[in-house]
Length: 260
Ligand SMILES: O=c1ccn([C@@H]2O[C@H](COP(=O)(O)O)[C@@H](O)[C@H]2O)c(=O)[nH]1
Image 1 (cartoon, protein in one colour):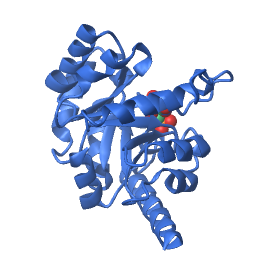
Image 2 (cartoon, helix red, strand yellow; image 1 turned 45 degrees about the vertical axis):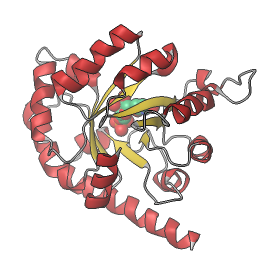
Image 3 (tube, helix red, strand yellow; image 1 turned 180 degrees about the vertical axis):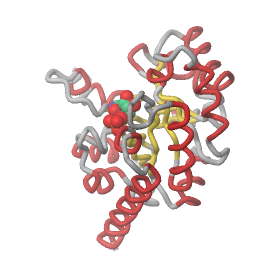
């Protein structure tokens, strides 16, 4: 999280460039497009987030991820969005894959199986974003279920992660941009955690509301706002990333002046 904070400050950006490579007649070769998107957007990126599914769906997916790691500048964190979640010894193997085989700086984790599904990823210097309130909108949301002990399932996930951060400071949450009320609620519950926030762009998340509800009161950072298809499909990926960064920064400034 220190690397992420440093990068967000140096690049003056909260943008996470999502990398979900798909074939398209427009782009032709996926590998060349991937390299182009990284090159064009790197100066604006606080982080990159390749989604593992899009690589595993290719015969050369793991090797492509390894090459991707080489194209991403060393000071820009790469978060491997694998939503890993299995018992401890298996989670260890997933962590070895993400960190040792691919060279990721962080991962996403599904906490359904409990703390032993999370903690093997909590290595020093690595960021672990745990699902709390995701951006999809199922009609019957598991995450909104009220627990007898109080709060919802997503609150519980956030509370567990918050507690674990006392010993494992690299933990953060995944909170979708499609529900700013929930984002604000979780920000109040966890004032200092970094949130990975997907859902802006193709999923229609409200950027202004995301910045308003999600940024930390203490330093105006704390949200890594991801967009994948909106950049991948843009005619000029660099321009799309620059525009988004500028929009986010304008909203951050407005938020700051409103607070003064
Ligand atoms: O709650 C979540 C968690 C992860 N994702 C992932 O983020 C990107 C979003 O892509 P867009 O094209 O910007 O919609 C994708 O990899 C998802 O699997 C998410 O959307 N929501």
